[in-house]
Length: 165
Image (cartoon, rainbow, N blue to C red; front, side, top):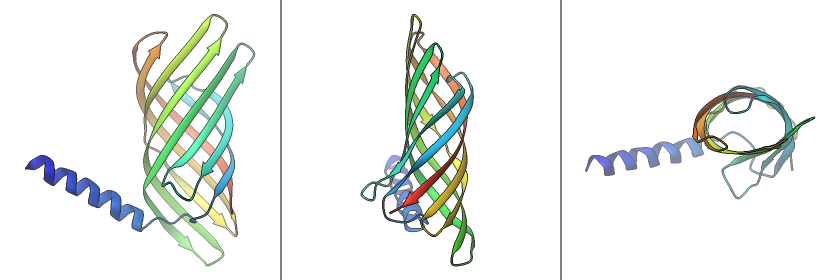
């Protein structure tokens, strides 16, 4: 019985959070840049930010290219909270808190790595007209599968701009 009550509570929280979503409903596409610190690889990256109208997930596809390393990371975040701090009609400043996942592939000189994990993005969003500038911090914990099996942690920071169509 406790499990059923807990599951109903989780569904109510997730459903209620979606009712307060503040981002536009259309297609959002943009660029993102960031870096990280920790056992998840760290380093700097650039990538694509994408939000399709049919899915409540904000996607990120990140590349990291160094002289002897190539990395590809994919993130998917569901915003639990997405509310205004300030709304003057043409300019909106909001904050968000979400849960998400991350998958990383890395290649280098005699190196191949694969990891996956969970992340907790929290950030600010400034929207004006069809443009959005966002900044977030996303602590993550996960499992490195290759080359060495074990846990990793990471704290990523991201800065991006999206256009909403």
